[in-house]
Image (cartoon, rainbow, N blue to C red):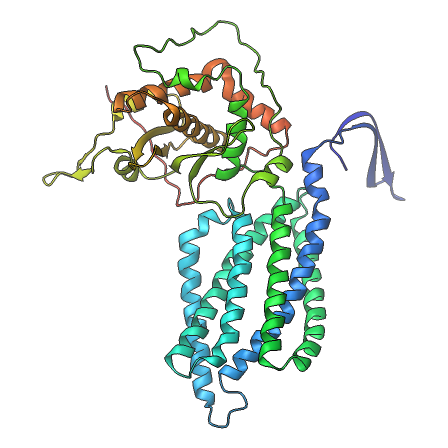
Length: 476
């Protein structure tokens, strides 16, 4: 049902023989909103469902072809093969897969939900490469080479299990907006079981007919191509309503670009030339030349595989500019090391850390914020800015979005600035961009417009590493 405004409600209560209520029906006149972005997102579930069924069907048949190759590789049909050797090989595969599961989950566990679309497709890539390695195993001479190939296939399947299972859970939660997550998972599992069963039955016929080397590889590559193509199309069709790093870049750069009050060149002027607009006692309405992008709009622009932490400025009037990189939610030690213009070193006689970061000025500037931001320039070929964000223990999901937007805007101003980028100039740009976002509650109005466009701002999807928080205690 589309989102609606309920009017003139009438409640009907159904009772049993003892006058106990058994059901309640509510009649209401509604005003439909056909342009609800979330409704459009849910309407695409049918398209995703069809493509998911096709990819599962192809994967089942390809899995039978690779399983036959594995059995041939471990010695089925060979009188000289030892059952003990096959068992030891299975133990080695299983052990390497379990170790890979632990390491992979530890390394990317935090990023699985924010980047669920990327890891959902990556899981299928891992699985398909594992099938190719399985089919290659009979051609590898018995010994260390074959063991290594089969172990690598086991590792890739383990990575597929972690990435696929976790990302699938996030996508199921995205579609289960009515609180029916268990129902969605149950129906999806039942459907996958049916499709896999049909795939095994059809695959049994395919395996019995496809026996030659050329036919096996032609069939395998065709099935894997269709499998990856269907998965890519299904992932592209999903319209996420949470703002991860890439979607935040697209949404906020477009929103800032359309704000007529934004003057990037003025924000980048030196202190002697810059003249800020005096704050007015009366708030002005936020006006933009275009409405915020909806989840449907962003899903057409975002890429499945995007470098982690990249800062990009995207708008309709300019090309996509890569400004640099940003790390959010890092430890204070890493913040000081990344933000220093020279290598930070610990003093030999004390646990103190020597750094060039102007921490007193930053603490004062961000006293009323839930984060601290600083940027440094790296690289000699073009301006590449590295932003570091340390979050306070009071930081919420909306505060994280503000921190990322501030880093994006400051990097954009510094990217086009013609002034000398010293520590003082960088600090001035950070202060001016923060003042711009806070003036007339501008950023809060941004968030309000995004919520009206269908974005869920209660989900924190910007951190892809272990979360760290700080508590600032100023002793005067």
